[in-house]
Structures are given as C-alpha cells and as structure tokens.
Image (cartoon, rainbow, N blue to C red; front, side, top):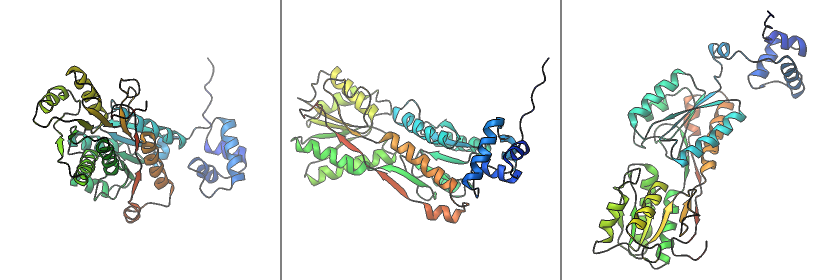
Length: 346
C-alpha cells in the first residue's frame, strides 16, 4: 500500500522560493507589501509544489473565509438569477465562493438567513432587502463588522451602499412614449407596491400622466405570480373607462398580462397596447413582439460585487469609514421599442 504524500506547507514554499514564511503568508493572503518579483517567485513555488492554503487555519486566525453571502428574493426569477450569476463571476475572480440564500421577500426569512450566514463568517454580503423600511435590519447592518452592498433596492439608515436603476425616470419615459402614441387611458398594472422598485415605477408613471393632464389608472393588486391577470383585466376592460394601453411593472406581470389579453380575445396593440418593465427571453418571439424597459441586469450584479470587493480590498474598514462610503450607484435602463406599444419596428 503506497504512502500518502504529505501536503506541502508554508515552510516548504518558503524554502523553495528562498523567502521567509511571513512573505509566503502575505502572498497567499493577497500579496500586500510584496514586490512583483517576490510575488512571482512565491507563486511559482506554490504552483510547483501544489500548495493549497489551510482554509480552516486561516479562518481561526481571523483571516478571510473567501465566501460572500448573497440574499435574494428568488432564483426562479430570471432577474435575480442573472444578477447572482454576474456576482458569482466576480467572486470567482477573487477566489471566493458565493453562498446564495432565498428570502421570498419575507422579512422573517431574511433575518433568519442573515443569522445563519453570519455564523459562517462571510467576508461580505450582497443583499436585496425585502423592504426599504425595515428598521431592525437597518440597525443590524449598520453594526455589521463586514461590508454589505444592497442592490435593486436601497436600505436607508443601514450605512450600506446600493446599486440601483433609474426606475422613476424610465417609467416616466415609457409612459410618455405611450402618451405620444395618443393613448389616454393608460393602466399601470402590477403588484407588490410595497417594494421600492415598484413604488418608483408607479411614481414615474404618475408623473408622466400628471404632466400630460391625464387621470392615472393604477392597479397594483396583481400578485407576484400574475395568476389573477385575466380576471382583473376583464373587470378593467368592461369598465366605463377601459384601458387603451397598459404599462406593466415587472416581467411576470407583462407575461401574465399578454397571456390574459390573448385569453380575453383582445388584440395587441390594435385594441390595447402593451409596454412592460424588464426584458425576457420570449419578448422578441411573441407576436407582437413586446416593447420593454430593459434593465442592465448583469451590470447590476457585477457592479454590486465589484463594490463589495473594493471595500474588502481597501484599507481596514471601520463603521465610520463605512458610513462615509455609503452611496448609491444608479445604472440607466433602456427603452426597447418593438411592436406591442404600437410602433412598427420589430
């Protein structure tokens, strides 16, 4: 029976590279205060010996765990799944593992997931808050010893930087586009009005209608899965002021609305125009193709992760410096015109 070869140690690497153990340790932990030439020598020795850092020992000494926590409402939603993939790519570039937890937009699940994650000592957290008004969550994160970045939704009072999109302005622009077609009874349709992004989109719609002197028509009673779209729209279409256009507030609402209009025998856009938030895979293959407000989804996840690692790799972080670093990165959405809004382009 052959003997198992002993794992190479820091001392073995130091001996081969002709440097001290402390220098090897600095290279393994990020190369701080190490010259490029020394870094190359140590890295060559590491590769030759097949050295792998003792992760458990590093954690016990207070070092990084090379893990990042990610809390999102869902990974079945293509928006959050794409954000997670983009963040994961950034984490891999930093030799780190992304640990994903799903909250279903429930505050209790969010707090429980945070508690479990913190016991695993992640180096930092990426978070989509279940609400922007959770004072207990804000207090918890404001005391956090690790950096936290929120995305898609801010968390005031938490001391956390946020990566957002210009939901208000893009909803205003999308509504103005429909108004430009001559539509006057534009229904703003969706659900979850308590969420920051939805509230901002409703606000942008309302502003555009106000500027045009048109009465708003808002229905945010649609559930997150849009299963009630057909019954709700049937009521609107039979009302004294049936909509001649619909602005939907998220991709599931757009899909549910399009399916409901088909079921109800309502042609798009000749009777009711449709423009929705968030692009989706079938938007170009449906007939008519769906006009959308397209969010830079991968950029959101990537930017949030890059901000997090920038904080991790900066100078030693204190709560004071965290508050000073708090800011919002606002990424621009894009209006993608197809046929469902009444335009002639594919």
